[in-house]
Image (cartoon, rainbow, N blue to C red):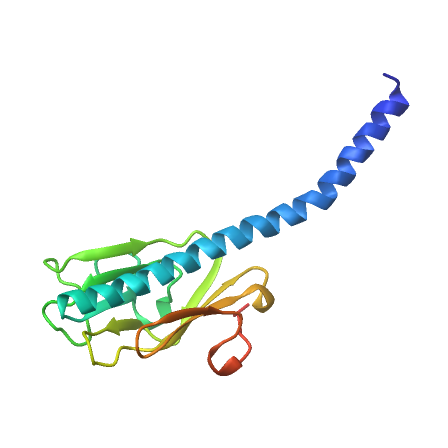
Amino acid sequence: MTLTELMFTLLVVAALLGWGVPGFEALVADSRQTADINAFVTAVQLARSEAAKRGRAVVLCNTSDFARCGADGDGYGAGWMVFVNEDGSSPPARSDDEPLLYGYEPASEGSIVSNRRLFEFRAHLKRSTNGTVTFCDRRGADAARAIVVSYTGRPRVSPSGSGGRALECSP
């Protein structure tokens, strides 16, 4: 192999990497965001079905230690959990004897914010907590997705907020 051939080969490899790496980074970010969104939808569906099955309130809230719900300012970026509120405490707080049904730590790098500190799902014919959870990463509002939870407890994933409003991501 001559030096010219080697330089040409390196130039082609560098060009292909230059085009491929940004696309791969976007693929990884999309995959992480999708995993987190699917985990939150799973938590909502589990809480909703367990409330109907048990006839008791089931709570989905933000947490960092899977033992207690986080404060209002914590957001869902540290994680979330689903538990049965057997003692009926208000505001809901997980006791040691209340079962933890689901816990999740997000994989994406970014913020997960909500207009609700917690979602409480109740048995049949009782209204549940509705709200919106927004998933943002370093790509900003253009790549953000929201989960809108209706008062019946049904989640839907949307590229916009409730009422069709544009999603906002904090810097």
